[in-house]
Image (tube, rainbow, N blue to C red):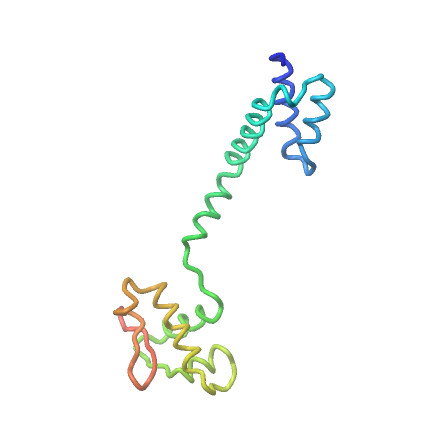
Length: 151
């Protein structure tokens, strides 16, 4: 393969990569037009595609970084967010499991203790340094849950 062939194939690959159709098809057509055989130039073909991957990563680096950061960012579903807002808006006030359940799910709190307890545990895992020894989201035995004042 001539150097000019390699440059032309690189240009075709680069121009057609971000079109909403396969650049590999364009590359095959260009190879046929230039008379380049893939069996003879497999290394070149692999390097050409590796360059495409590298350029795509460079172009999309912001989006890729956002996706990676998203893997490690705590997320709250609507119920957990509502429970946290409810408790934070009334620091020091104790809410029973039934009160929390009725506020969040807008249903009668029949057998709701486990549901609320699981959501509280998940919240602690996200906001407490040591969820086993909570400093902020506390249980008041026999009564319910509260956010510590000034916590």
